[in-house]
Image (cartoon, rainbow, N blue to C red; front, side, top):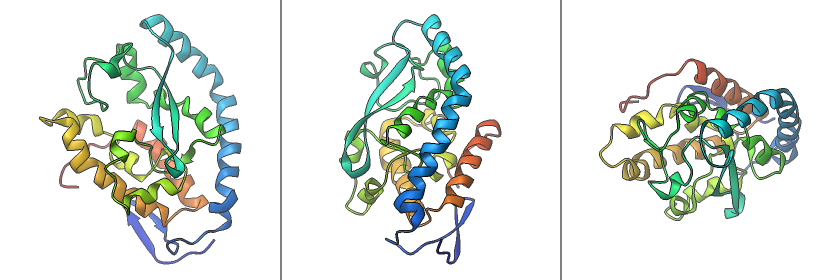
Length: 231
C-alpha cells in the first residue's frame, strides 16, 4: 500500500494515495474484503434479521423489505434493499428524503433508523456485487442528474453502506427537520458537502481506512454527535 501525507476527513485521519492510483486493494482486495466480511455478517446477524423481519410484518401493513432505485457504479441503476421503516407507499406521499418528525415513519421504523438496523439487508446488495461495505452512499437518479462532471467521479466505484459523509451526517434527519424546505436544503447544502467528502475518500481508499470507517460507523450509532451548521 502506498502511503503519503496524512489528511483529516472531518475527524477521520488516513493516508492519502495519488489521485487515480490503483493498488492491490482497490483492484481486488476491496471486493475480497466485502465478500468475506459480508458472508460472516449475514451468518452472525441472521437471528437478528429474522426477528426484525417478524416485527416489521406484525407491526404495520406492507412488505417487509423496501426497495428503491439508486445509481451505482458506472451510472448503473440497481435496487437498494432496506427493512421497511415507513408506512406502505410512503414514497408516493412525500419527498424522497426524510426528516425528523416525518409522519410517514412507523413506530418500529424510528427504532430501526435510530440504530441503522434498516440498512442490514444491504448486505445482500454487497454480496451481489452491487455495493461495497464502504463507499459513497448511492443516491436516487434525480439527484445524480444534477452532478457536475467532477462530482460524477463518485460513480467510478461501488457505492457503500457507509462512508465519511454518513458518519459526519449521522444526525442528518434532525438537521433537515429544522429547515423550511428540507429537499432544497439537501440538494443545495448537504449533498454537495457529502460529494466533496466522498471525492476525498476516493483518494484515500485502503483496507485500514475502510476498516476504520466501519468501526467509526458502529461507534457513531451508539455515541451519536449532533451536527452543527458551523462544522
